[in-house]
Image (cartoon, rainbow, N blue to C red):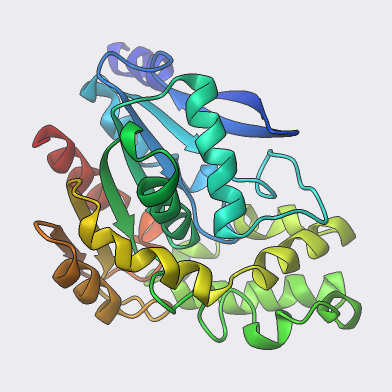
Length: 292
């Protein structure tokens, strides 16, 4: 009974904030701000804050508030179209959110595209609020997207007219075909794939998802990835050992070029390592946070 009560107390709660002229939704675990700063979690395309739900409860004893953000155009946050949902546009929103919530001493954690946003936030926008950076299977340097994930022919989909030539039905079918390439445990993933797909199943969803794809601009990432070597913040690089979406060579390069960084490669895990190995990710970050 005590364990069940503890789980209820620690269960993340939905909150929202008005940022610039958008509403951002997020999951909050713990008291606002925490007693010792915050952990802020940024998800990958095409996921949302839900992708952290199996991991967050394991950080309940850290004394930090834990925020899992639905970035603009994802999850329960606003889905504006057209809008700047590039890594720079997303980072602007996150920086405003930090100031609005008065977050400081932040461990900033980014997965995939969220890692690209985290790099902009940490190196350019609110560096003084960042205590440490965690990059998980992140886009970086000139690797802004994989050629055939999360949709086939990603380069063609960056054309502004692409939505005119792709039906909602075909896009959803393609997502269901391509997303399993990012996991090791494909059988289990089939039970949760709806979480990744259903929010895009409309004309607006199609336009917004293809807007995200169109704004995955390699030079936007490359312009900040090289700044990580002078960030001078504790940095942890976590990677799925079987990631075929963002190859492990990028983990090695980040680790090599960021002085004093730590690296953890998780075996039997693909790009969606938050799904394949939530406990391993949680323990890696927990150990990292305790060492700060």
